[in-house]
Image: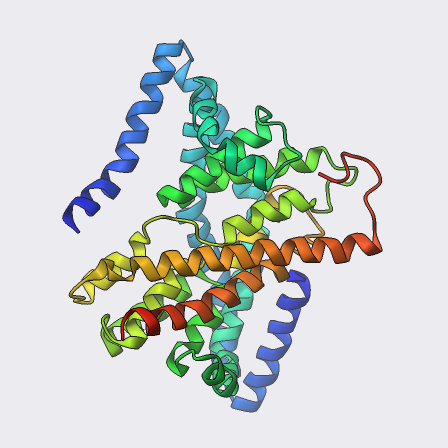
Length: 204
Length: 176
């Protein structure tokens, strides 16, 4: 899906640039893109390193187990196959907690660790399991309680009430994540009618 | 707003204070645990870089060739039918692809139409309730060695599309 999308974007951009006469900016931007990617990975990646380190300390100190106790009800609802004390379940809880608090950089390493743990249980780790997809979906659906970035930018733009968007944001987030989960379950059904999981691990 | 700012500014220092103290209390070797984690973070960074580079290239091509503008213009009618203001189409196109790109478009919208206008509010709700979907999927898949993401992208896009529709609807209902 991603491969098709990216190839499609390249093709579409090439055709429009030829028709529009914008081949020069296209070429220049493409040449500048690697540096942009490097800068982006600097800003995202090293924050990710920091939080991976903090998470590992928290895990060894037993703090993650405490966090995961808080999320157990949600977890058993969304990921019924996972044992609540498994490393994957703990990592999912940390991921969700960090997302709710708006600590994106702290959420990523926990989420990635959870996906790695879940994929290790699959017969083919290169094929995403339904639980991994569900967790990725939850991470694409902005679960944070307070949209700080949007609010701060509104404040800077001179808004009279930067936080007035809060109820609308909650309604929108909740509905969109519910539709996403529903869509994922439906697509899982469709996919399973073609390729059915045989073992219990495979169903994970 | 000020207390909120204080709270969000305090969250990171607080975590960085509580975690080492708990580690100390439990007798965990702080430095070795920390470096173990950082090394695994570096590994993730290394594994995600190729996907990041490819995505950055695609977004650059999409914006600089005028393809985004073309697509925005051709989506004006369906967006109008769905109740999404036409001015927001570039934002909805960029939002799933690029965090920094969407942020730039968002700040432009705020200064152009004002944060408390219909467009400003809808854009704010949209920014607050959606994520950089494709970047997230690429990050998770490349970092954990997934080559077939199966229905991760289509399902997430369903969620995003719902987010776009509901944000326009919610702002219209709440602020009118």
